[in-house]
Structure formats: C-alpha cells, structure tokens
Image (cartoon, rainbow, N blue to C red):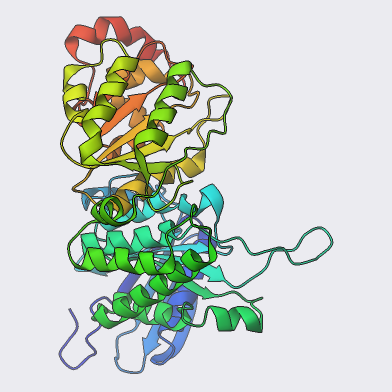
Length: 469
C-alpha cells in the first residue's frame, strides 16, 4: 500500500499478460492513453527483450508505476489462466490481454481486454461469448472492444454494406453484467475509416471516452459505477438501433428490447418476458446434409413447441413451461430407453431454453464459433432457468464413448464440448456418427470425474486409444 503522502494508487507494479507481444503492446498503449491527464514521463523498455518493462511517472505521486509484459499464456512460472479458473472462470478461454496488479507478492486480477478490429457478424458475432461468460463468472471485468462505422471493400474497392451482429449478442453482455454484478461489456469505438454519416448515426453508441475512463478506473481501483451506467446506456442504444433496422423474424424491435431490459431491472428474467409478452415463432435452419431421421423429427418438434429466443432464426428457443411436459413426451416417443432421470428432468414445470448445436464440420472437427453459442444462450436466460443443448452435428465417432464414459476428459480435450457441458443443465445427442451414447444426459453425469467402475472395462480401451475428439 502507498504511503499517506502519495496518491491513492493501489498498485505500483502492473503486469500485462498477453496472447503475444503485440497484444501486450496494444494494452499498454491503451493504459497510457487512459492516464494521459496524469502521465508525466514514460521510460523503457528495459529488463528483457522477451519480457520488457516500462516505468510510468504520474504527476500526483512520487513512486512510478512499473509495467511488465508477459507475452504468451502458459509460458511463465505462474499461469494467469489458472488464477481465472480459481476465481470461478468456467471455461479455458483467454483474452487478448489480462492486466493484473502486484502488491506484497500477490498478483491480483484487474481486468481483461479483447481487441476486435472488425465488428463480428453472423456466427462469429457470438464467438467471444464464452470468454465473456468465463471472465464474468470469475468477477474479472471484461472489455470487448470493437470498431464501429468502418466499411469493407470488395474486389473493385467499392464499399460493401456494413455487417452487424444480431442485437441479442450485445444484449447478452448487458443482461449477464446485470445478473452477475460484473463489468462485462462490448465497447464500441470509432473506426478510423468511419465517415460523417456513420459518426452521426452512432454518436450515442461510440464509447471512446468511456473506454479510457473505465481502464483508468480499473487500473487505479477507482469507483466506476457512473461509467458503468453510461456504458450500459450506449450498449442499449446500439441494441435498439439494430432492432429497429432488422426484420421482425430476425430480432425484437427497439421498443421490445427496451422492455426486455426493463424486465431485467424489475427482476423478471428474459424468458418470462418473451413467453408472456412476445411468443415469437422459432424456425430452426438446418445447414448440414448428414442428419438422422430422428434429428429431423426433433427439429420439427422445436419448431412446433419453440418460442424464438429474441429471434425466429437464431439457433436458440424457449419451451413454455405449459408445453414442456408434452415436448418431453414427444422426445420420449422418438427414443427407446432414455434414462428416467433425464426424462424426469425434461418434464419439469419450468420454462426450458434449448440451444441447437451443429457444431461439427463434415470431417468431424468442431466449428469454433459454436463454442460461444451455449454461453450466449446462458447469458441471455440467466442462471436460474433450465437449459438443454441438442447436438446433432457429425462429431468424430471417437467422441461418443468418451462422452459416455468420461465427460470431464472430453471437456479437457475439446473447447466446444467444454462450453456445452459447463453451461448446460442437460444434453440430448442425435448424430449420424453416434452408436454408443445413451442420448440423454443431465448435468450430474457430466460432473462425474471419471468412468464408473461398472462401465470401466467396456470403455477403457476405446477411451485411451483415442488420439483426438
């Protein structure tokens, strides 16, 4: 702790853990910009080429702040990602940079930064939801920085129409922040190529100033409640604009998104609002050809019973509690021998969120953007609602005996499966490659650390012979 005659800066030693040296440098530039009003002198680099160190002198204190880079996660004596896990982080997702403060030999997590030059759209829009979910669970502020207002160019150097995310994605950050009392925000800054029209259109969305303010507040451990409120307002401004631009089957309207936020403020979770006030249709799009007949039937059940989770076209839906028992009965008729505990769970008298995962390319390797889909669903519905993930894509055949016998091993080997198993209350499998699994699982199965003794002899050889999943 600082002496009484110095500033209230809590940490005079700062570490920047980055995916690589470039991300460390980008985080450092952002930190310097956030301290511009107080920054008197910057010296360095020194100490090491691979682990450079800088000193920042501020006008209000005598002792400089030392900032050291640690590029490459898992390369140093202390793996900062283990600290995230120990704080409650659910997934092994890193950020571009993780900033910590060192005091008395202890390294304390301050915030994480994700840099995104182009605004993600389509499936890529939710690719980073897993990171937001994990850092939010660990109560580590997560700043997802995206440039807004720029343009892509086609082969003739002509501007293409700007691609934008579905508003459900930024809203999920907002709803999750409210539920977790955490700072997990998309922060939209002005793209260097933004024209005057874009600058006017997104004037209420751009948060360039708030970005530097929140970085300073988190770095110096100052109160950032007012900045949080302004960021919340700016995210909602973007959500409302996007909602008003999109077709009614693609998104809620701007007014409905505001009502959804108000329902969260009144302690009603999003599923209750959607079931009571919207009840929009759900129409699952299928993009793969290799489907079992039963998978096709399950998709049709989703269309019959499902309510769009803010959209008709996103791969998420809700089953009203009043329809859930009938939905469960239809699922039971499609299968023989589903476990009683799974069927009992599936028939519960609660709203049910269903996340639909294609997840795997024709060769069996996983589709990386789908890692963010289960966290997106969970961040939208909150922790108190039931969530089932349905996996119908062609995963490798070696996947299924591991899921059946040792799901923890599967999660350790594969980020998509970790995302599914960590966020879901239940799992339903219907894949053309699966001839082993029992199809329906509740969370208790996925929390079992190893193969039950009664099944060990049957599955042992297949599990340990597996080279990849």
